[in-house]
Image (cartoon, rainbow, N blue to C red; front, side, top):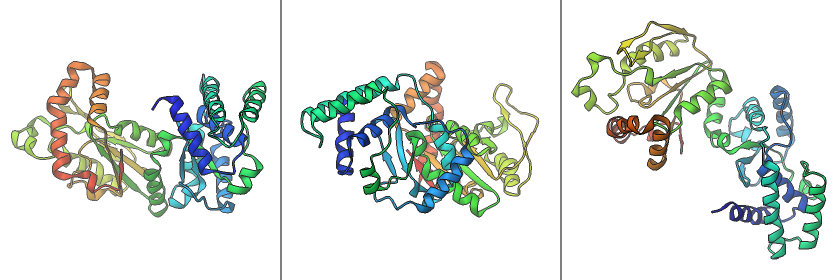
Length: 353
């Protein structure tokens, strides 16, 4: 679907979902779709307090908690807090989403052209004359951020925040994390999935969001003496899970400092230890992290999935054609044997597609 058709479908669906909306409400939806949040968020703590107060008094939302817009942003209704997400995490995601982009106003004008065509065709409940006059007046004012109409407020009592869609798709996992942190002093989270599925990117995002320590399965490749045909024949045998369990997971579970010893692939040796203190949240990322020998150590887990074509494209872009062939010939078949035999996607807390 091209961008104009996507905008057309969005506007028609929005009018159907909110039959009492006014033109300014369509303007607001298009502004949010193109430009994102109306203002920057300087103090996430203050924003969290405001969200908490607003959520306590707002009416339940009758539709989907996550409402797509026409672009990279979504509306997340405050009912999401009932699913376990903390106001602090919600506010941090809102603040991270509050960035304006060059070219946003030009994109907004393109979307307004679609709105005018719908009015000319009689497909929205506003005349072409009224729509054109309102669009011209808004453009003359510089296309500033606008508010919901009073009619919309009375009819639908909107209580939401804007968020990037990439963040919103993580909300099922983040809600589980926040709920677990409320109930436990220490939480261990495993992120498993195929190579290039986004595990490392997600883990780094969680580290920034929660300030938590991060541990990588790729730092625990097999030592030379472990690299036998019998070991490689095991589903999930392509990692030193015994050392990872003894040196990382068991100390973390006990709240102890981990003496982290990376395997150096250039020298085929285990490097000297680096102390890493256990956190409240501890993230373990990497394929094979949900091996049955390890999974009982975790409180939460997620498996990231990726279509084969996109995986291939990402690996070639990231690693180059020559190195990518090693993934296709060796490492991906080992991963697929693990996924097919041990099915971590059926044992995890959340699956992220």
